[in-house]
Amino acid sequence: MTTTTSTAAPASRRIASLDVARGIAILGTLGTNVWIFTEPRGMMGYLDSVGTESLPIRVLQTLAQGKFLGLLSLMFGVGLAIQQASALRHGKPWPGRYWRRALVLFLDGLVHFLLIAEFDVLMGYAMVSFLVSALLILQPRARTRWVVASVGVHLAMVALAVVGMSLAGGPSQPRDPAQFNPYADGSFWDLVVFRADHALAFRAEAVFLIPLTIAMFLTGARLFQSGLFTSDGAALRRRLMVIGAVAAPIDLALGIAGAPLGFSGPAVFVGRYVVAPVVALGLLALIAEFYQRRGIGRVGGALSKVGKTALSCYVLQNVIASVLCYGWGLGLAARYGAEHRLVFTVAVYAVVVACLLVVSGLWTRKFSRGPIEMAMHRLA
Image (cartoon, rainbow, N blue to C red):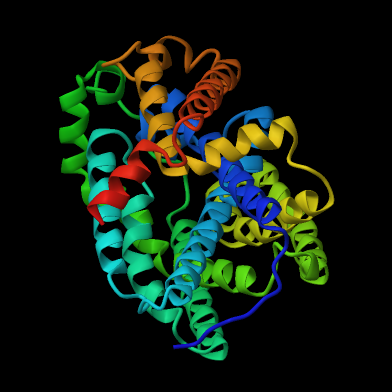
């Protein structure tokens, strides 16, 4: 086994910045997924319209698209590195019984996928974490080779997908308004059956993202072990912030200019799966740098509480949005999602975020972990 050493910043600051980053990642992923909830035809309508909406909507979607999923993936890798360090510190083997935690996470993701969200990331994270937990015992150079190989496979898959989209060309056929819409007209069980019937299609992204997720997990772990969150990591943070600053306008241009130039699909695809993960590196470095220079503050404190209950908040935000938007709940998406999409989506996002901040704040007054985190800890 390999051990890594890095100078440590004061524990409170280091832990706080990690929790804040997790909180930002959770609320940021909602910034992407909320557009799925507020689309009257749910995921199917979102896939048909993404990248072709009005300019204000394209801007907002692009600002969130892929970056916070990338940040979440990096933070998951950081979490694996922390667990490995804890195991070694206590003289326990690594990965040891981590497979139990990965299995519980996979089952949690499966339930979440079937009952709540067809875009669930937990199943994919569980599968990749099982592999990466073992890879963390390798020497840094060997892990770097895994990152390079994974990125190469990912870029090749993106290139093939972009070529396929370009050759296919043309917009998708409009759907019959009279066709049954499970998101607006179906019951809770209808949506469960719909997700199960289309499981291969809905899980395709999770499979597609396996190489990228391997790279992001390993990169997050390496950044943590290299002192990104310590006072000695200033140079590393600066380099990553520069890289992120260069990638950010490219990402924004792809999201905004794709539709007018007639290649919205490929542009959004490249932005989400190639450029946005690079922006996420800069975003993580920016968060780490920000909290190296100042105290956590009220805003950071609220975000850190979301971060401490990240898994629970991820599930809860999707439950709340489902209740607000889907037909089995209040059905607001069918009523307001078409004619007032921008205002309605911003309103739903604000309501869900407010709920998460309140619930996580109340919960962390008594508990250090979220309810799902506590259950997973006991089961695993």
